[in-house]
View 1: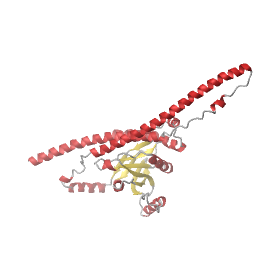
View 2: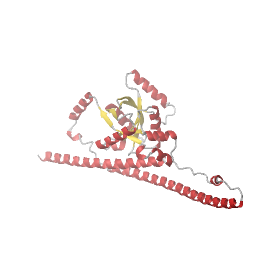
View 3: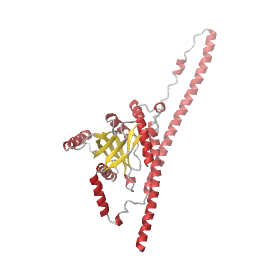
View 4: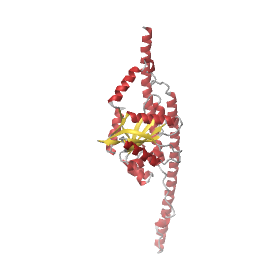
Length: 338
């Protein structure tokens, strides 16, 4: 995990020097976790605003608040956010908007809506990030909290509004370079750490195994089902793009055949002293085909990559939990035999 975070940090420094890592207060994390789990019980997507400040290329997230539900038409979301931040300022609490967060289910976070929202945030607030919290994976004992930023190439591509294969090739944008993951560090105050230590001592010994939930089959099953769905979507995009290439190849073949025929006819006209026909007259008959939008396929490829990474990480962590549980069980049996 540390090596992976270092690789992400190095990649981020090469492409975007705005922030190097995100430091999140424990209270802000608990607020996000609580909100995401409450909304996940209703099968809704939880979203909210992140508040904090930037200190020496470190984005400190000190507070957050949820967005109103989209079903409430009487609520003006922009006015609601301004009102909350204005009232936080009155009580001397950090009120600077530094990004947003949203919940995720089995890694289904990368989407066109996420890309559009982060583009608007990052173009208006340069240091903004999006924090994604996976509710289902975290409920099994693995805190899944990740921060992302759009790469400069992705911002330029979205600003140009050109999602053709040529644009992706020119900007060197792929599914791995749409978002850059920013390392997250959770920091608590010394008083909070002392309180957690005291609470840990008050916890009965037989109640300390709640985090060792071994029921991982449900999470893996949902991950695999989502992975299969994304692969099917990518296959459909590949079929659509292959049909486009076949049509373009057929049109180019007919165009070259027509130009060759015109060249032969012009040679005959020249020998007879007649005026030749310009090649533009033939080219006008073949209108250029519109290239398909490759953004959807790129996002789907990124989702497949994310699912594969989550499955690999989840399996390795589950194996570690099995070995820990075995040691705890052996120690418990040895204690009972004495």
